[in-house]
Image (cartoon, rainbow over all chains, first blue to last red; front, side, top):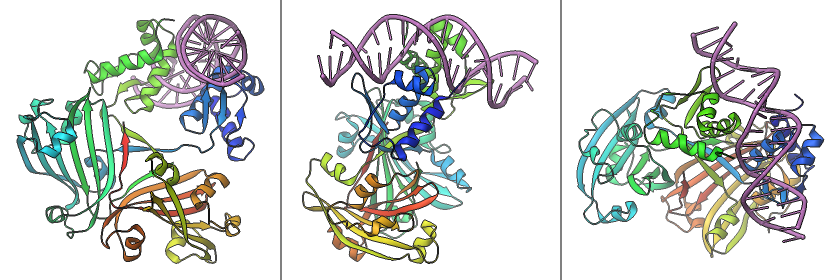
Amino acid sequence: MSITYREVKADILRQITQGELAPGSAMPNEVDLAASYGCARATVNRAMRELADDGIIERRRKAGTRVRQNPIRQVRLNIPIVGQEIAELGAAYRYALVKCKAEPAPDWLRARMALGRDDRVMHLICMHYADGAPYQHEDRWINLKALPEAELHDFLDVGPNEWLVSTVPFTDAQISFHAVQADAATAEYLDCSEGDALFQTERTTWLEGQTITFVQLTYRRGHRVTMQY
Amino acid sequence: MSITYREVKADILRQITQGELAPGSAMPNEVDLAASYGCARATVNRAMRELADDGIIERRRKAGTRVRQNPIRQVRLNIPIVGQEIAELGAAYRYALVKCKAEPAPDWLRARMALGRDDRVMHLICMHYADGAPYQHEDRWINLKALPEAELHDFLDVGPNEWLVSTVPFTDAQISFHAVQADAATAEYLDCSEGDALFQTERTTWLEGQTITFVQLTYRRGHRVTMQY
DNA sequence: TAGTGGTCTAGACCACGGA
DNA sequence: CCGTGGTCTAGACCACTAA
């Protein structure tokens, strides 16, 4: 075996980062590259395909391959289950159910979850603790039309997130990150001052077009989400 | 051509989401799957490899392939250049340089950027506006030992981010998201009240082990980072 | 040690889309 | 139209690792 796709990929990447291949410049086609590397076209193809996936190069049939002007910088962000997240910090995890009630969906939620006028939802408020200290406040709404069995389940021992993950798959999700000021209730739950800046995640989850759940996760003061390239 | 890798992938995914393949269960090996789908082993391999990349299944030589207990939920997050980000909102972008000065690195920064006692840095403060309103406050430090040409450049017309992207490649980066309370200066820059909760990104960038730059990006009130699965 | 996934090859056909 | 990337095939050898 002459050369691996990893070596081809690394070599092309080197040429790009060292300036031998300038941004925007065209690259040889796969057949020529395969010949110059002395390998099969499929090998070159895999290297180039991964570089394209990574946002480094741009490929178009007939037009060929060029180095991207501005490489698309992207990160993979893991969405952990809160219990695992806390365990990875080396802390003891504790879960507490604060509220669990089926009720008609409020107006603002109907809009967000695309619910009908009379649809009911399960409203859950939970707290997640790390080594006894508040870590995350969870405010969740589950669409009972899509998931009637949620009404029969008591969420005393297992958090709704874990229950949902093991019960229903989902096909699409939207996540957003932002900052909020702690209101009085949240401040008490998270043991901080009213008005403190808190990191919040919102997530909506769908199964084949139907909204399953909407959740707001508010973290203790100073929480960070960290990623590496 | 009988079946494509996309069809194989979709079919396996369907089996998983519909419960035919339970979490944790073992799957047939590639040779058997190829036979049952009536395609080449390479086709099955590509489908399975992508499912593994997506965190849906887990593969180990000799041990075989199983459906993950808890699928790794991950998102790809694009890191835009602020000018492009604003343009995509359909707003007019304006850039302003507030401060640009070479100086010795303060202690806290030396620790973050792994700098020596006498290393100097370029300190830049910039503002980015969308349709005339403050959008992002940029507080950046560039390692002059790694990038002496930064001292010769005036950053009057082009933001340091764009300049860096087009000037130096980087090999590694760490990004973190969190919430901060606006201090008096930031509040004035971003036209909000002191104490408001603001979304902030911090990014450190390395080139082959050497720190290039550290930047804090603070966004206007209400900014959100949104991702889809 | 033996079974499984990881990868390469040489060749083929095809879909897309610029010229 | 026709060059380019996208994909499939059949076969092969290899690396890893559980048994």
